[in-house]
Length: 401
Image (cartoon, rainbow, N blue to C red):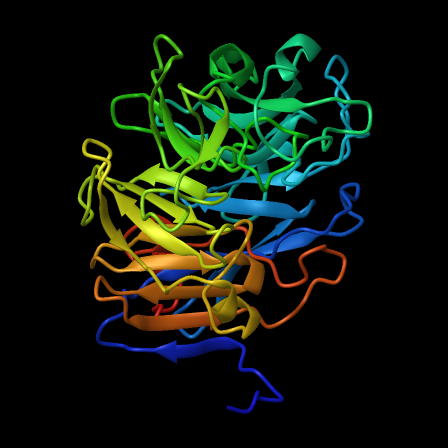
């Protein structure tokens, strides 16, 4: 089969009878730098089903990914170099996903809230009580770092430093009201770094989801697993997908079969499917599939640990080399639609597609322009599809279809 000389971009396919009609929130992955406000303004677009922007927000910093609120406000994490007094400066330790500021904008791009923290990275949520929760990084004490198992030997930061994640909830005044620290709750004998990952970080958490019962669902890229935190005690009460484990008889680190559907490789975007949606109460997660060179969205019953649905596209190095496999080794996510379809962001390839429960692709969007300031030129961190009834400001927009 001959390779094409040109590739389609924008919306490259749309089944009007099977796709869920709505507006898709989209922005490109930011560049490696973090410019000061006003130097390199960025934008977030709301796309119709043809991939055309029908509303845009102008933002003063490059954004990781935004979330739209029902009132039309946009909450997003942005890359910012401003350094507030009293916060540690980790700029000499470059790590993926670092940002520095949480912002909320109104429908017209006016800034309503901003909060600086140079340790902030990857993900956030605005809670129903008006508070915000986000991810941050802190150093692992040297004595504890020595006990952390797994990973590639000698791949800590150049001075031997290892980092771990924390969650912080703040109120609208920026006051901390709750924290959880991985260094206090991860277990070196259970939360073992997978053999393909560096030891610069113990966990490399990349998302936060507050469950209906108040507990926290998240995932750790470096330990290849999802987990649930008991909000009251801070204990990790559920784990799923991890590859590396400590054999109790030999005392050696072993690896589970990476082709087992219940293992993952470097996952992202673990969250509970919301009430009212098909699969409500199950976990939806993007398994990047780093061990098998094939990515998939997974729906998992957290009570039984069984895989309920997956966008399985096969696995193996052959499909990756030939360029025809669905494979994004980093970033990416998945979101369940009201009609039962799943919107999947294959982030490394600048690709967003909608898949039916029968694994039929019924809508596809390919990012048209590269950002050569970014390490990943075509990257999209995540994307979300909103129904026409989701936001009261949508009445001002043309129909999405």
